[in-house]
Amino acid sequence: MKNTSSELVVIGGGAAGLMAAGLAAERGLSVTVLEKTRYTARKLGITGKGRCNVTNDAAPREVIANIPGNGKFLYSAVTEFPPRAVMELFERLGVPLKVERGNRVFPVSDRAQDICEALRRFCRSGGVRIVHERATDILTGDGHVTGVRTAAGEYPTANALIATGGVSYPVTGSDGDGYELARRLGHRIITPRPSLVPLEAEGDTCGRMQGFSLKNVGLRVEDKNGKRIYEDFGEMLFTHFGVSGPMVLSASAHMRDFESNRYTMYIDLKPALDEEMLDRRILRDFDKYRNRDFQNALADLAGRSMIPVLVELSGIPPETKVNSVTREQRRGLVELFKAFPVHITGARPIEEAIVTAGGVDVRQIQPRTMESKLVRGLYFAGEVMDLDAYTGGFNLQIAWSSAYMAARSIGKE
Image 1 (cartoon, rainbow, N blue to C red):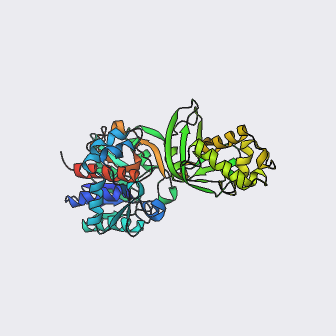
Image 2 (cartoon, rainbow, N blue to C red; image 1 turned 60 degrees about the vertical axis):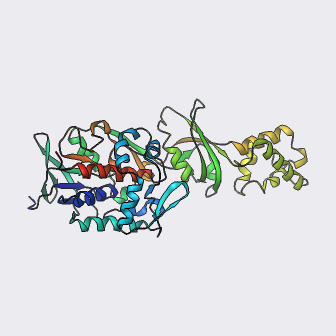
Image 3 (cartoon, rainbow, N blue to C red; image 1 turned 45 degrees about the vertical axis):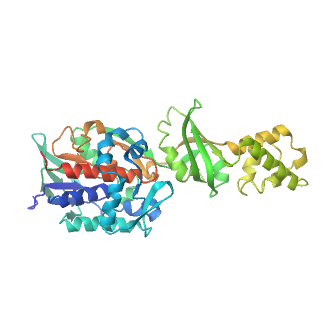
């Protein structure tokens, strides 16, 4: 038995766990964090390609709109600890922030480690005790938390917060153990699935363009019934298995039923031009290359690795002379540029996902406190819950807001 009891034991030393620990300690609570790996905030340190998209400088209702599925559950949390409050806190902790395109917020230094270290300082300043042990069980009595067990012993406490994350990026410690802790106490677990994840595509079309990136293109995604489920403008990348990049990751969050649905991406390669303007542009290029083969006439319109694919999909023999291309063939080429199809077959493995969808069923959690409806003194924060958002800083905002609600509620009867 551990000799030191705490008013709160936080299980998981990631973004949500450290934020909750720091906020609870600031309230004067004695807090112990159990982190099973050697380092805290490992996943946070690699987010945003090492830059850390801290949050999105958006109004609470916009944040909720970017959380598909269970966004309404977080209405109170995001309203009471919105992005501006998060920004003020990190700047108070010594991290200057900046706002970039799409209202994405980053540290001025472009160093995710500055955010990690700020959270560690926040915890240290409040006397938070960080112990590198794995929680193996949450102890209860009469429907209330009484302690947390590890291989080294037990930590007596009346309050435990599960902030273990999901199952994406398992090398950082997110291996799903929080789900099992919650399940043993009667909580339903919505089957985890990848979100914000690269997508696999049919055939070898994408593989032939592996490494080719597209910038300033339009994207729409349709389901098998032709219903448009996502639309965006930005960047993406062709890979050996399919597609990736910011737009693709966001689009993947809308594709939640690969077993019974089929999804097709349509890429607008020239969104600044309508079909008539693009047709005129193609005619000018055809005139410029009038003595060349058709495939050579696309050099000014498309990347080198994409030209053979465009030629193949157009159905126009590559050796066709430009002046022999018919009006109908040219019209088909215009349509191809405005709606280049990629047939999606599924998501990459959950280990490659940025975020885990699924997790502890939020219907068993009090939205104004993050406390379990089944066990008194048991709280949740962050990705361990069935909450996930689109790219742009919204997923970290889930972590911050849910951690805030739990930290301010713990110990209050």
